[in-house]
Amino acid sequence: MWILRVLYVCLAAVCLLTGCKDHSRDYKIVGTLPSGQFDGEWIYLVPMENPRGRIDSVKIADASFSFAGSGEEVRVLRLRPVLRLKIQELLVVTEPGRITVKADSIGSVTGTPQNDALQEWKEMREGKLAAYRQLRRELKAAAGADSLALAQQLKDMRDEEREFSFRFLCRQGNNTLGQFMQKMLRPTLTDEQKKQLDESLK
Image (tube, rainbow, N blue to C red; front, side, top):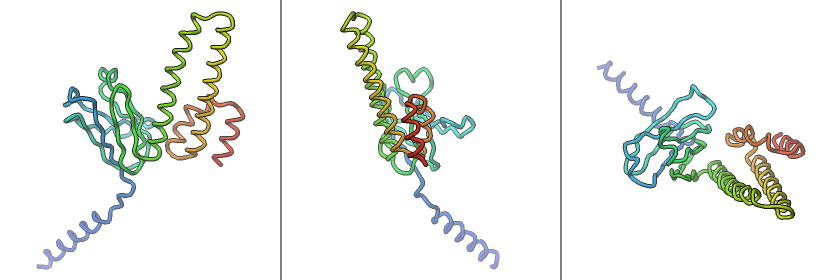
């Protein structure tokens, strides 16, 4: 009888510990794709900065997928290489909360503060890239005053993007996204912006 009592006590302790687990740091990624043509394919959640980190994967079904876990870091969602021409790789911050992913040729990640901020920066960057391409095409065919005006417009757009990135980094500070994006965007800033950014991060 005493063995059964010990077993009951152990089981009760396990249940109590399991029930007391803190889920406040958990994330859930819920994603959709544009059609069922990708059903049966695997989608991967890969660490961006830790090559030895755990790679999670799930099989796509009914044009949807989901991941759940804990631990905040920047990861990338991707399919196998040949499908990345159709479905854009997407950065995602695995911060606590429900993260919504629309995987497509131009995808999006929203639902939590850092992912909303990253999506805002991504949309700005994609818009600028399209505008840069258009201006460069026009510059090839321009001459004289028109060429000078277009060159100035190109410079102004680059200054606007630099200012956007600077304010973005200041807002994110030293959170997970901020630290990751500083490595990419800091070299594009002016010396004065770098100084101001350093002051804001103290």
